[in-house]
Image 1 (tube, rainbow, N blue to C red):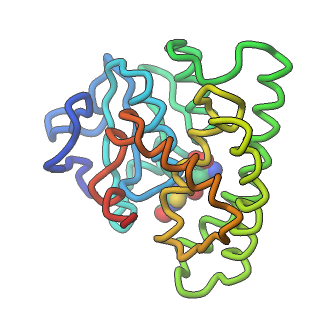
Image 2: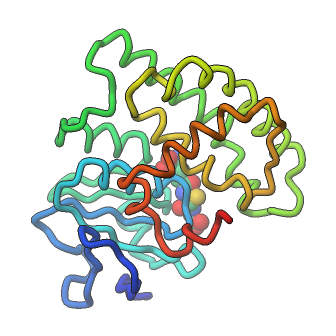
Length: 227
Ligand SMILES: N[C@@H](CCC(=O)N[C@@H](CS)C(=O)NCC(=O)O)C(=O)O
């Protein structure tokens, strides 16, 4: 069995590294996120944790050398997985809504039920239209032409929104921006080139990339994905 211990040199201050003595459950008094170091879904959860700024621990998981323990805590054997005392959660959007409700400041889901329902609907659309293609792009970076073209076209369609507003739901950063940010960060990495008409989208992406929470949430492997 592989050890979950990691030795990242430039881990940000709030990000704690699991030691062998805490293996395999990390620190039982705070939230533990089992997170892939290059995984866009784990990246989403790290962004929310760092935006909230409370105490938590990120346990880095090397997906190329995945510890067998992940299958014990997630029947689908995937990351991210959040362990908060007795609660074990998987699926990035479900994890993120839980963190948002446990630590309401700053609130990332809209407070109004109608807007919240719309936000959930859009999160679902992102999964179907964008993130369902991630596996193909990750597994076959040189191929996957169809998937690359689909993601490019879908993102290009979003661009006009950002001529009118700063973020996906309006003037405030929200869970929708969290959900899409890891993909925007990986566009070069996946070989996705957007047309000139998508310039407002890229300006929006830079706005997200300059947030302290986004910067702190990145692993060293993610930092080098974008030139
Ligand atoms: N829908 C899931 C997707 C999670 C997922 O696909 N995780 C991948 C990494 S991209 C994984 O752990 N795959 C298992 C593996 O690579 O062995 C979520 O949002 O959390």
